[in-house]
Length: 96
Image (cartoon, rainbow, N blue to C red; front, side):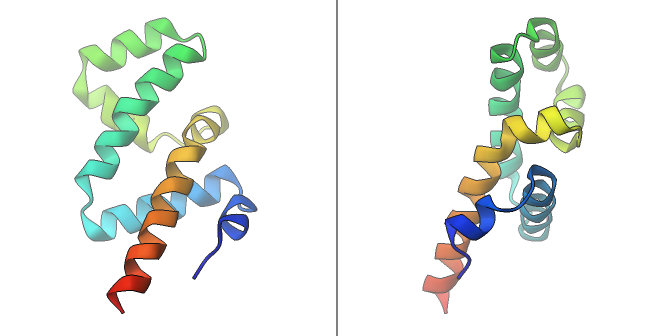
């Protein structure tokens, strides 16, 4: 089982890639929806009010933002990736 410390030692980009790959493999729509919801709030909290408004207005833009890989977006979503990966590590261990 991967520990929090091991995951936390990874870069935001590595966490993103790992979480998105797992979610794609599982077709985990709720995970992507969480990224959309919390990403819009994170953008607004970071001072990007216009960007947050544009995302709310256009669902296609929201999905592109979820997959965006610039450092600021990855860092803003880091807690989401950590939470998702930790939960799935626990579920997979219990399923064995």
